[in-house]
Image 1 (cartoon, rainbow, N blue to C red):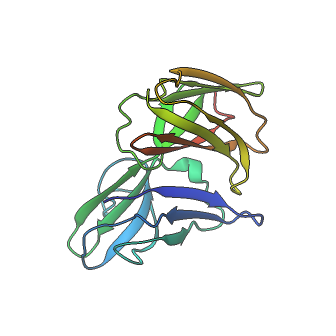
Image 2: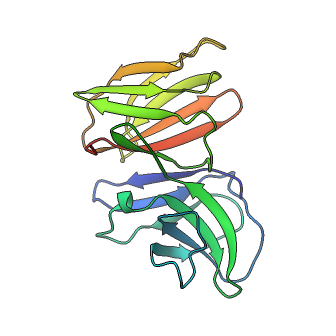
Length: 191
């Protein structure tokens, strides 16, 4: 599986999981997309799963609607699974829990540097940023940019403090490096 996923919430509160244009995966029968609490096949023995739809296409942008009333912070992974043959395709991690908020890596199953975030009284501290970070941006769930900061090649700090006043408890952080993109969902009210 290649590509990136984002989580968005519109003005009416509808939450969607969106695969980008670079998304691609192998062809298979009866393939579905799930939200899950672990990197475990979302089959009948896994009770911590929520199916959000049949895989729409093996490549390209696509959107999956999260049912109303479902709290996205209950899930740590977006997974793809073939139901008919109980074949686990894989997926992307949300729940890397570090510090006082939940940081969720949307497109990287294992973030080598274990980026961590701490949020308190309007200050967001990012630690263990990749050394090749080019930009760090923060967005609300509606996609409105709250801040962005850029770094010259080779001059990104490993620790960064930013002033940010989120409009709600969820912030999406996008980190662009010279060779990768990382996205994190922060739940700022977690203790």
